[in-house]
Image 1 (cartoon, rainbow, N blue to C red):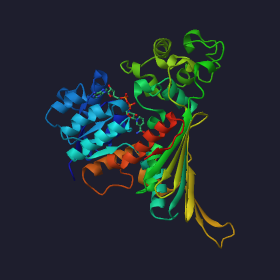
Image 2 (cartoon, helix red, strand yellow):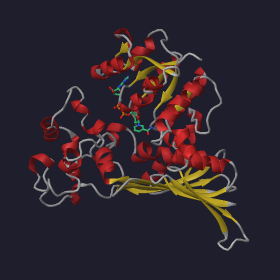
Image 3 (cartoon, protein in one colour):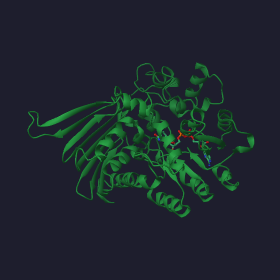
Image 4 (cartoon, rainbow, N blue to C red):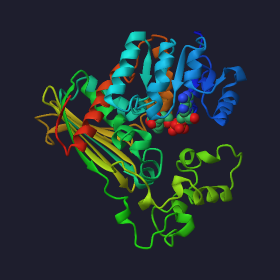
Length: 430
Ligand SMILES: NC(=O)c1ccc[n+]([C@@H]2O[C@H](COP(=O)([O-])OP(=O)(O)OC[C@H]3O[C@@H](n4cnc5c(N)ncnc54)[C@H](O)[C@@H]3O)[C@@H](O)[C@H]2O)c1
């Protein structure tokens, strides 16, 4: 059996642990041998979870990069705007890398990182976890087999639920682009544009156009008597759909790693700890209409490809539930489905059939093979971590494997869409 790939966690937030946990499930595949994070609580958590000694705890990526090389790879789970500053020294120090998306927050940074990867001949894989879900993976297999012919048009939709929107893009980490340096499209939908580019294969975009704005959560839309902080001075605390009490105290487990991250150092936080946090300076306790959010809450993107095919992506924040939908029309047939339901349909042109076409319904929740192949809970994150090990070992990459070079088209399309949106929809050349 091969030796495990060794890796160091850089940025020990919740994402990095998700991938690193492969080492706990399959120690023959991955071994976590150290951590770099300025947060001492997270350093300790990593050390105890994966069982390495204090001498392999570092305060930053930069400090780690100054040591002699200690592992084959790093799992870089730092925040979006830190990916360049943390990755470049480590790539120059000879590490390969599993790197969270978005791998860069603008085109200049993207080019800088891609050049660095090329110069060092590094292996860098980007965490496009959606590719590894049974739903998208199976659709890609169908498209790649040529069943529906050449793609004429792809429509994708992502509805971001009111809860997720409020938590991440109005009150939370991705609400203000001056702080997080990402747009909502980049943070939320670089996956969707990546899926579109993946399905299009070698056909690259030619022109990108986009519209979007902040529609809902702004001061002028606040109810007349709304307070500043839900639990402190708001008479609507029990009735407002977006009240911190109803969203976070009544449902303390939803998005817990964001909302309660300040309580990480406390072993068993009580309701009182949570109430005090929301009454204090936590952004999650603020009136939803009175935050400093400046990112859009809905955006539409149109892509024209070099072969004349087209694609659209609609991101709509504030919906009652989360939803991802896709509809691909090709010259021989079409595929459409809904990610949350785990069901898609394949329709193939059949001129002599009464209904004009053959229709096949694929239910991924009941198709035994798919469950076996991907794990019972969807398994995108886990599959990606396993594929990173294969990528490191130079084994045959899976259809989903996303090297940094494969991720460029999706990221670049997002940058151009945002540029177009800022210019009122003016088309941008790819
Ligand atoms: N693939 C996905 O579907 C998906 C989903 C959610 C988030 N993400 C992305 O994952 C990334 C991480 O998100 P998160 O919520 O886990 O972040 P986080 O804020 O919980 O963790 C980031 C960690 O980086 C540490 N850090 C800061 N500066 C550092 C430095 N110089 N060197 C080393 N560590 C440093 C912080 O102390 C923190 O512990 C983000 O880029 C995010 O957009 C991806």
